[in-house]
Image (cartoon, rainbow, N blue to C red; front, side, top):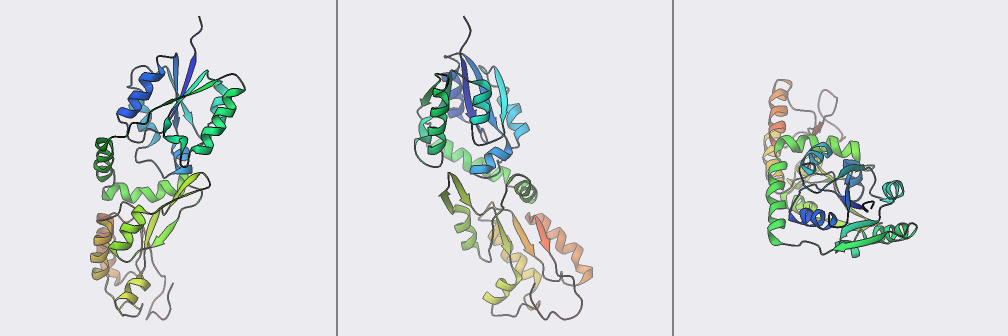
Length: 271
């Protein structure tokens, strides 16, 4: 008798007991095929994964009970489902509400074309999992990983949303600000440290009056409360002989890139 095909879509950014629970449930029905979201697919409705696709793939290959893993290169399941035509799709029941609600309806309609069925597993919601997310978040967002994150965002996201941030409180608000819109989660992807704004809030002109050491001290406070990558407006970079040390300090903090004004002499206008 031919084994039934079970399709399990999975992001697997940070694997936990909930993923193992779904895989164990799926293997009771037949041949388990995991549709692992690519970095691009995950970025379509949330943000760039903490863990790259290739690393997530390696981890998933160690799980018992999986017969095959294929890439799901779109948040939309249609391409893979039409290709595989599984007997069952297994998913956590958390998608009955929220950003994935429309996708759930679409999957049910697709399955009906070949008499497939959707099986929903109770979502694993435990405080320990949330605690692990926070713990792993602090590991993955070191200064080194923060630097490269902007490059990933530009590679995988159609639009990268950057907001000006001159105070730790703004960093905290940005970190937690999310909007559910058009079937996806919208959020600011990164921050912009502006010389104009930082000078203005200190009651100074944007002409280099606010020294870079003061700005870097403030930047350190901002980065301590947010995991977002940051672009630093370095004004004219200060004195040429100090530029190397400036770059070193910004790299140490985890700044992804800097913007500098290409001019000589006294500054008379903003960027």
